[in-house]
Image 1 (tube, rainbow over the protein chains, first blue to last red):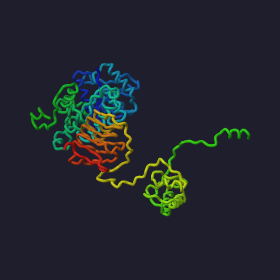
Image 2: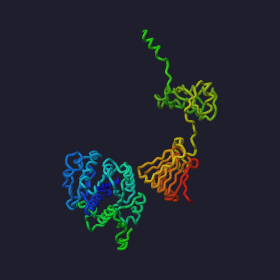
Image 3: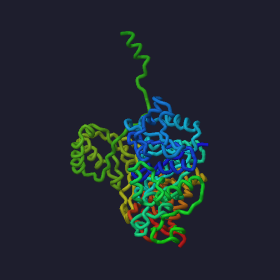
Image 4: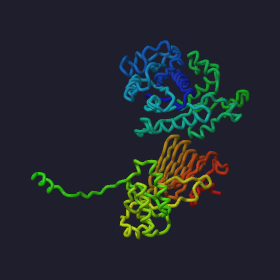
Length: 270
Length: 250
């Protein structure tokens, strides 16, 4: 049984691609067969974050157009056996994607026996974002703790509940999760940033993970190693927790308080 | 030539059809021909192509009294001299009835009655926009129930009945009903009750953070929320021309 998960946000620069890469790695590390697809046609980034940019020969649009087989275009990750990347085309635009084309590729991945297909959505609510979410079973909505990101996420959640295949065929809709990134407990405590509670209340959804603001994220992107693979990073631990929750485990949220508050605060944080 | 005559005989002399055409109304605030001529000449000059030899109906409603036929002849003359062609009287006011015969002008029925501008406009931050007259669906229609959050950018409309939302309404979302709007959750977006003019409609919500509330066209925008209402269970109703808000259950 394949599950299609869209990673989306509406707003740009909140960490969709970072999240897609880390969650894909996290799921694959747990033995799942995972394909992660970059839907940001024309602004290809996922391959950089995954560190496979020099191995992109064929891309998503090539597969849709029948220039190559899906097998030729899937890039096998060098670190994790069961992880594959399907890169976006850098030279085309979003009109190259069609509903039929995307459906065909997803159907092939399902037939190939993948456990999870992660769709890394582009920013915005136009065609690319629409097609990234259209076939999803679940959605991870990435939010930064600030008002414009929260507003855009609300808009995206509205689209998820009305403009997807599952919402239109009455299949129970898309299961929605919030993932907070760039969370800075100190600034939340100072009232400069929205808290997890505020965001949960405004969006009316539960939080699948809170990723603390960390310099490791930028370093990981530049190195082409998804941050979840950095064993010393709080961001990596937060992503691992989010993956566990995605798989149904119940874990308390961590990193909601400043680390200097000591052992007990960290153990019982929240 | 004979064939032409035969054809002419076969064709009817006239055809009568029902058709609707747009007609300009001239509202008369005075019967002073000089004042009317001055003002009309100015108006006609601004758009001569539009107003020259255009058919108009006169509406004597704004006068608030019954002008004599003599006065009205002067008015008609002034209107004609300004370049317009009066073709009838708007039949709203009772005065028009009496004038139709002596002036030999037909009464033109489907005009909306003239209402003097309400003085209460703009009072207490509330403004009135044109609301379409109420023509609600048959009574007894159950409320339209919406159980999912209404998200930013979404709009839900309950036609001819109440709208009940049992979840939150996000900022930038719109919940609209011809009847009342009930939100059992936070209301952060816009709520419009009495969308077709029912002034008895109300807005209720469990947690008030609305951006805009409107009842029967009277609306209020909340740039800042009054502290006594923010986050509280609140109802809003129309008291004459004033939109009132009150905390529920106090």
